[in-house]
Length: 488
Image (cartoon, helix red, strand yellow):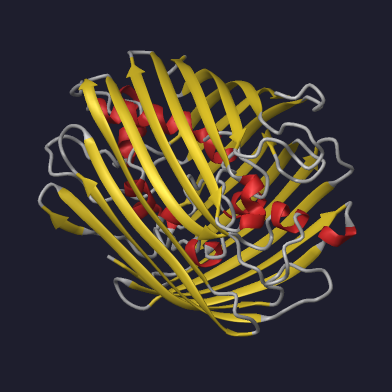
């Protein structure tokens, strides 16, 4: 993931592992694994491809062969080797996943059903699997405009859906997805929303140990009122700001016996429909590489430099200085898997923000991440995450921001039909050249009841509060959801 912009706190707070906010619509972890077939593996396998080789999602595939089976075994499928490397490469990105801008449909879209409660099977169509899901729900919010004093309650009827098309070819990979999240306000205001996303991705296997990969996506969403940039720009209460987001990625991956190397190039574009927000339109170009060395079958170390260059359409800010700039980051990290149920990952480095205008104060800081994924028992799993990064911002009188975050979550299967999950998040944002520090605190609980094989009833509650050095930026809100999800 490339370095994020300001106004992304809430998306990070809700889902550290989300690469695209809307592509996680109503997906279970098993479904999310199919949505990103080269990303971090879920604990429960997704539908296997029709191949005599071991399925790519078999939990045993990530275990060292010499320790799992003492007798001689066949050479592992190269797809599994590439998948394992991709999982390792993405672990730090999960702890720093602040790329997705907070949208109004996030609360509905990011309610994820635990794998142990329901498992999508998909519909087989030739060499592809189609994975559809949908939900209907009612959302209550007691501060829809994120205001400190003039609080407005709102009840919204929401609907969301996702369809994913994924190939199951012996070699290569091709996929596409389309998602929508909409809400109709029936009480309190007319603050309705309609967010949608389309995307495609693919992988071309050049040899048994190397491949090209590419992806592209386009999103139209309504920015959430909690965005720091919206509040800073003093958008009128209840005013909707639509944003177009487009992105593309092209990468190459080589995996040797003990050494691997990845090279990626990304382009991200943001366009705001509201004319008053046109000064935030920007394009970010990112180049990154990662070299990984397997010290043992369970321990690997890596170095990961990254360069991101952000160009604003209106480069001159209100203070007369150019806002165009670059962020250069270097990380050194390790990934350790002591058992099939425990994965540890971490990285530490330095990030420097530079600006085209010499009058802008450059800023730098130690950055890094840490992540723990623990399957405590067959019914209980936990995740801990820490992260720190630097990114550019369009908040008035500030050029960059340093974000520090912490997350803790646990999921427990109560019975064959019931499950519970909880999550606590803390995000600290320090704005450069500005006497302002924001602390976002949130706690969420989800209750799930499986009605039948494909139908789940969901109850969710979240408390969110922002503490800030700027009194006008402080607020709190309570949000609740009652919904029904269908997954095939």
